[in-house]
Image 1 (tube, rainbow, N blue to C red):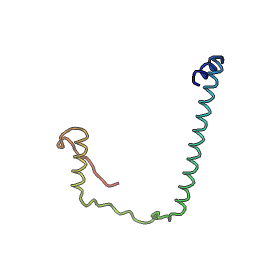
Image 2 (cartoon, rainbow, N blue to C red):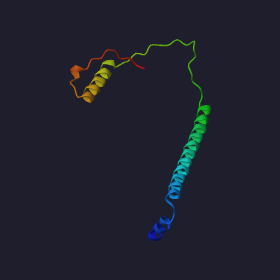
Image 3 (cartoon, rainbow, N blue to C red):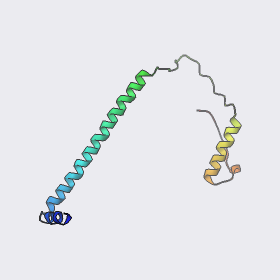
Image 4 (cartoon, rainbow, N blue to C red):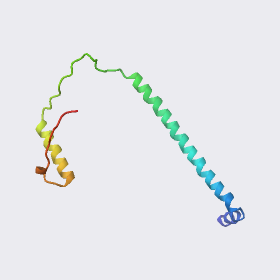
Length: 103
């Protein structure tokens, strides 16, 4: 079977074979682009429904902003410094914290 297919393709002119190959690639790319756009449309619609059904709990603009107090600040700073020192491959004494605040 494969031998017959090769013989059939060998009788076709090479420019036609190239054009068929290019056309197949572009049709495949167009199908992939269409599927991606369809998935984007579906996910956008489902996210819109989830956001619309969820109650809005936005703080009012007139409410005063309270400062955040970090309860165990020293422990968190020590853990972050240890992780940074481990990642950089240095000693923990080489890590210097300039500022640390809750976001």
